Length: 68
Image (tube, rainbow, N blue to C red; front, top):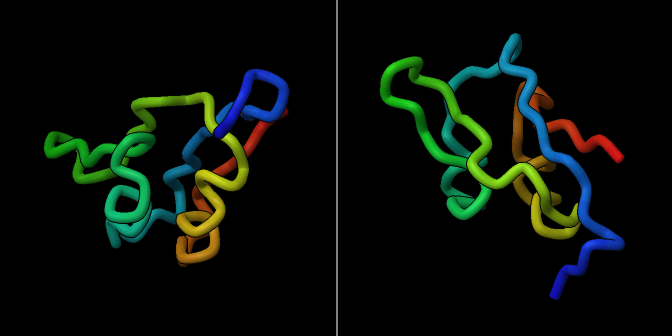
């Protein structure tokens, strides 16, 4: 139920990523696991805060960033 007016740009700051894969488990339509780097990547960079809030809350490294 998102629209263009409330979508934000999603980025990952992987400096503190511990590889828990929580973001991929919670939002597989936004994040994917990169087997080459053993880190998550953003596959859909535009999302609402509501769509990524659970992943942001569970991320121990606070790696998920939202940019307006």
